[in-house]
Amino acid sequence: GSSSTSSVGEAAAVLGNSPTSPQASSRSQHAAVRKCVHTLKPDMLESRLLSKLDGARLQALEDENCCLGLSEEVVQQKTEVFGKNLMTPPPKPNPWWHLMKQVFGGVFNTLLWLCVVCELILALFMHGDDLVTPVILSGVIVSSGVLQWVTEQRAE
Image (spheres, rainbow, N blue to C red):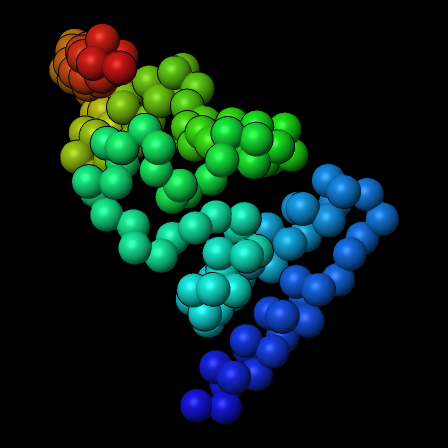
């Protein structure tokens, strides 16, 4: 419809702009192509990516004299402009924060800690004599969380 025609026109207009430096130009063109790659015709996409996609087949990849894809010079140039084609791994959470979440987080652990608090209130303010139960329950909760944490740390 008219929206795809207008987006193709917008893409062509954006791709035609040329900033001052060659690297900035390549980056802005690359960003513009990425935004509208689904609206571009294959011949326009090939010219903007400096590549040849027409007739690409898996058998062509085995042929050393094949002219499909990017040339080595273009690959080197794009690597200099954009860097290596690597995905950045997500940041790892702080292991100590993860341990705290294992010990104090979760519905079940929250309920167990609530039991510990209730036992302590009974023992301290209601003249109870049982301090062993909250201490043992706390030890079980902490040891369970630490065991889960150690297991997950070894798995990574």
